[in-house]
Length: 338
Image 1 (cartoon, one colour):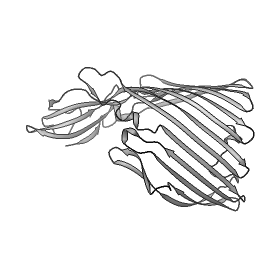
Image 2 (cartoon, one colour):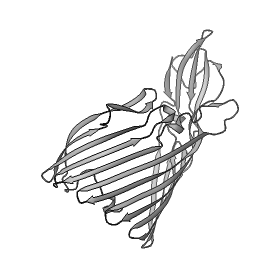
Image 3 (tube, rainbow, N blue to C red):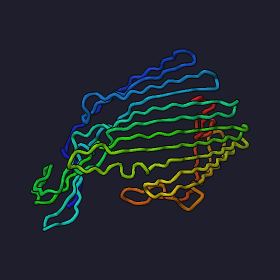
Image 4 (cartoon, rainbow, N blue to C red):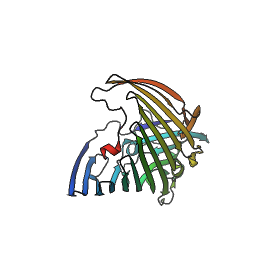
């Protein structure tokens, strides 16, 4: 009575992709990185270009400005163009009633135009700050639309071993019915007060606005639904790292994530602790605890499983680094300049 079908049952997929990129040094303070990805599949028409450009200006050895633009695609797949999903609803006057998402052979790539700009400043030898802002414009986003009214049907859009009985159908389809934008800022300071102590912090702000494209007469769209309130607007992390006695390490991490208003999920604060001890030159043993502030917290509402919670955990690990004595999992933006 219910099920999902991919039709055609057998299909040959083709994928051609390539990259072109160049790094151009205008002078010792100005650099341009530009390139594009080229993509062609049996789900697209012709060659799709995904260009990207990044400009970096370093007026002094303590300051860097950068800006970038990227055009990206999420190409269609079998799930939109060849997929049928049927669900039994009820029985009316002896006829079974089904809702069915029909395949959409004209599903278009979802598209993103992303613009970013940032600034990094180094205060003395041990303190720096990263600040960046972004604006992302999306169009042709995936939507679930009812495309017609209930009607009597006696056939199926794909072959079956037995003839279909007469049934009532509410037809729907995956379409490109949403568009919108996200924008926000991110900040990341870092300070190393002593040789053995490093402090890091991050803050991000996100605002999302997804809207419904005009719907043709006779169609009904689900609209943006809970999209606009299903990502946290604020996220904060604080990380205090200690390298003591050259062999003993201690990491203390605090995290805050704000609420998901559309899912009625509360914001939460939690913390992680990690203690590591280096054994010889290549081995490290560590003990860690995660999400320690409460027995558990809900992070989001799954579909269809319901609330997804993360519980307090603890673990031990033994790692081997055969190449160097650098601390696993750590890198210094101040040293690398990335």
